Length: 478
Image (tube, rainbow, N blue to C red):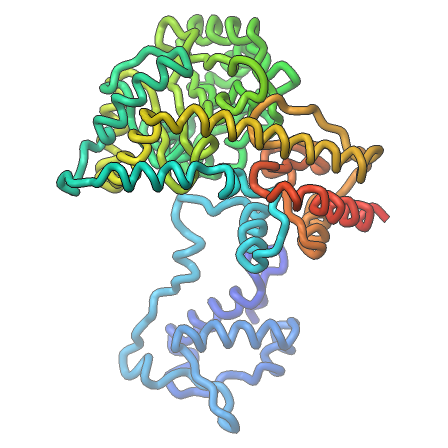
């Protein structure tokens, strides 16, 4: 007799439901026939009765079986009739396909935040509402009524926004480019998605930082890419590691976040930047530079992007408004050779015919407005204040249990828990106590690291949030 596979990642109840559906479709249980009772089937399959209850519930939702008090559980007559009719097994479809779901920890974080709005949120990698230029954007929208035709726009992006970005990139990032070499995207992740889908092929080897935000994006595995890690220290990646990976694995592309790296906050050392570009030039190796945090530098001039030092065109440059203005605008951009931009714009047109013109217009107006610089100054001031509150709370609550390097920009603090700890147990205990964070293993690190985003919680919640986290940590260490 068939038995469920207890080593499978598929839940037992789902295995039982799938087996029963097959047996019904093959006529072993014809329409109207009585199925074994929950208790009897549980004994036959050597599972808990509650597991069979869930399996029957799954089939009942699909209309395959029906239950009546006193009559037991029967195969539906109306669904199958003389010729069996099948509802698609949506569960199997949802588990299929080549595009992988988010990592389990990230799904758990999203689920917890959706269920409990009172959680103190150190997990979400975005600005709090009070750090976004909401008033400024409202004023711009009131001052500039949109009267143009709202039809499909150029798949490369709204031309006035691309022209505004040419000025912005020159003025703030020392990058000289043309509007024809810019693609507007719905954020950095769409830029990365287009690159992995259109410029690389299944089986290609690529290098990503370790730890890295890229590691948390299953889109790389969905594209069939082989990932190889570049360790990050306090000076960023080591260029010689790229040369070694190229020799061993013939890597095709390097993905890097050199300024206030996510999650570590590291800034790539100037000498290493020069060496990295030299290695890329020598090997003919493209570099994808993700640069969302540079303008958040708390003191002095923001570190320059690699792209500003790129004299031969090795770097594809990605930027975004998400970390400096508002993630809800969904505005990002890519600077690349025109042939690459044309290829990716063509793919974008197949996906969605281009972004909505309205947020692109808002972004263009904001970039050109007198509000942009004051907003950035206010943002840096508030981020620095929140960072210092977080550091003060960690030093007070966990002076001997965690270590960290103080970031000089960005939104995140990367921490190492000194004693050995189970990430899953710590996350669940923290959620139970009212605080949430992202375990470091999401970004490829070993258990015992974590990322705290201090841009998201209210300033008044940072101290209490770390107090709750400290209690959770001590609880799981006991």
